[in-house]
Length: 376
Image (tube, rainbow, N blue to C red):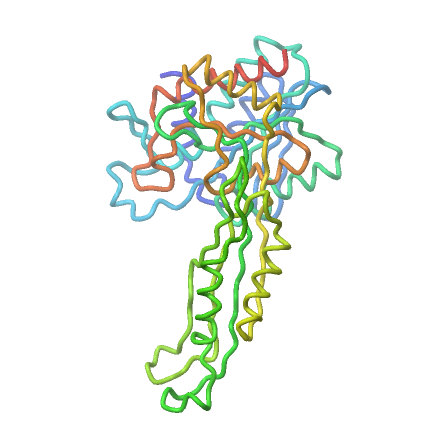
């Protein structure tokens, strides 16, 4: 069994559902310490984080990943136990196989190979891992970056191991991500009997015209790097459970995925202005989970990763800013160039999550080549 497959097996066996790490980070730390990495364990709240570095000064290249996984759902629906790595038909099955224990294993193997072959390499290479990416992400990379701000640690280039590929390794890389702005909207009404609407105020009726306006609003046109900003309602809840009672309150969950063509402040202001223009009595609790970021064309890391995909995978990768968010949103504001490169994402978060064994065996070569082209 190849080193990357063996390590992926070891990681999958650990039931590390957010925020539990279940021993993944100590396993990685022991391996990297053995080849000369400096290890820093960073625990914030109930979250374990690991920062491992090799080298001193110069360009700081960081690999970024997470050891936590989402819940399995009903385990009886899996063809094989989700925390027992199983190979069949060229695929490795298990929770986290693609998102993202396979990438973590590939990063570790690549870093071991790099520093063993080049103990006096230029610059600094690091691995940052957290057990709080799939959850609320408050005490993971977000807090590590705050810690780095206090200690003066910088990152110049960052490769995130999120599963980025569509159908084959190297066919797509993420060169940026949209921002995410969520709101918990509470519409205030007056509860009453449905037979006497003049004595009540129905918050559902109050919101309906404003909601229609919000859903058809053109927030921006996007730009060359990002699609237009999108607005979605993910949940609406109101009512007492009785069909003869007008509810006194409605709560709706809304979300913007926004491009660099808009700002979070502008989206908040426009949303509230539309609500007020329709006479809605409301309060809203906003949460910004990340600003949009982009590795600009011509950036060194972006050029290196594109070249690695061309040379090692034989494909000119699509350079995308689509998808959801990643922990790269916390690294980019440090001034780092951030690129995401990982395996195929077709089964992430699903029952019978899996990764191609052949792709996983090749992934350390890509990460190693990035180290060599940036730091040698």
